[in-house]
Image (tube, rainbow, N blue to C red; front, side):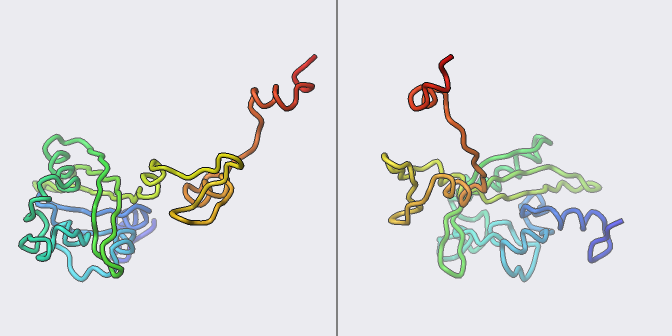
Length: 197
């Protein structure tokens, strides 16, 4: 059997999971982070802090007008992470929602879109929640307007970026491989001999 650093199979499984995952209590205090969450969040000096503090949410800071903790700011009333945890614990069912967050980092404030999954978990008499955070910023940004050349169908990568083939754009952004074919309309128009007789 595979064992984690502290000997537990469950710990090894959670740490191997590729999405950032936290174990939180009813007040969204983080009790455990998996390895993916530690890599995403950088050095986390202590646990048993509220989720917004650990996630470096801009609303969980004195500069944001809060009392310096997650849950204290006006914006926290609509927080998808806090709301998902509460809904999952109340209903006993998994909750999945998309969230927009502003987080503080070394380069300043970054805007990210997360897919938040909250799953209730009972340990003895304690109500806990497993929260998984998946960064879907690139997918959400693809829903915005993409500059496509009307003649050659190349795509501009970003504001004022280089033009690249659509296949390369899809590979870079979504890790999609493209295959080529010819639709029926183009087959009839450009290769009529292939469709006749």
